[in-house]
Image 1 (cartoon, helix red, strand yellow):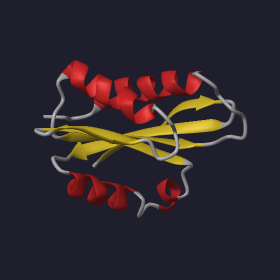
Image 2 (spheres, rainbow, N blue to C red):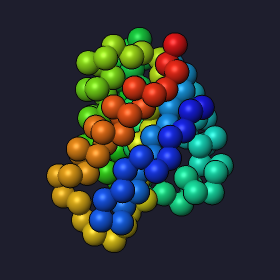
Image 3 (tube, helix red, strand yellow):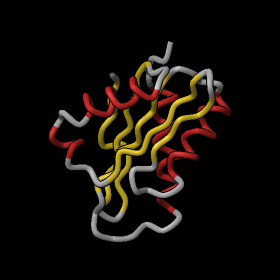
Image 4 (spheres, rainbow, N blue to C red):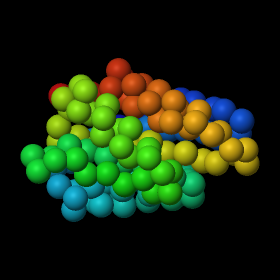
Length: 118
């Protein structure tokens, strides 16, 4: 599990991105469970995630409507398979509107640029 914290701050909202190997929905559930064992991530407003399996895309918006699909599209574009990416947001009290989607993209870009995907 690779975690990059404090990568984006906007109007009080804070973002982190994490990921690791993942090939099935059960592995995704286990990954999220492991991530949220960290109290900070358990208290996050959203842990949005996605991965590409042999059967297709698997995603969960976790209340951040549309964010999972952004992750899916970026994984497809980079042809990253068998690897989950989770974008975590702690809500800061002010709505971000469409900027929240740009932040999801920026978080995934950060992960793809800095993580050891192998």
